[in-house]
Length: 110
Image (cartoon, rainbow, N blue to C red; front, side, top):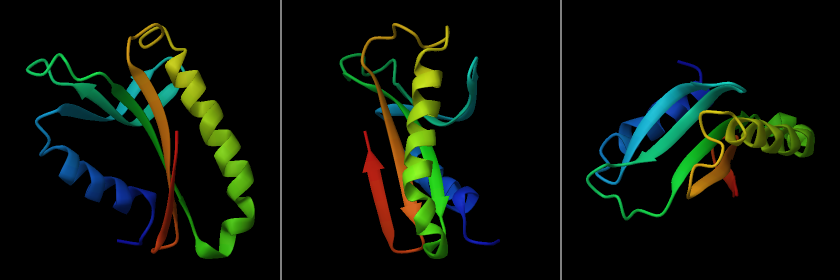
């Protein structure tokens, strides 16, 4: 398997599925598209204040000149997902881009 966004997603989901706090959903469909990872609070822990829309991005080291464009497009995607009828008005909804740059760098943009 070539290293990339799908590889990172599989690694993250394997850890997130162990969580007792959140129920992770991969490629949850909403009106604006498919959310990479949606973390829904567990019904066993209703006091958890947030649920998360996470957009994963992977950029090769050689493509770092595209980072501003990718950040902007990712933020627009998150806004579109959050505004969908399925999620609009949901209390405690947070959004984040997890941007991986090559194999050694990352950014988390909320």
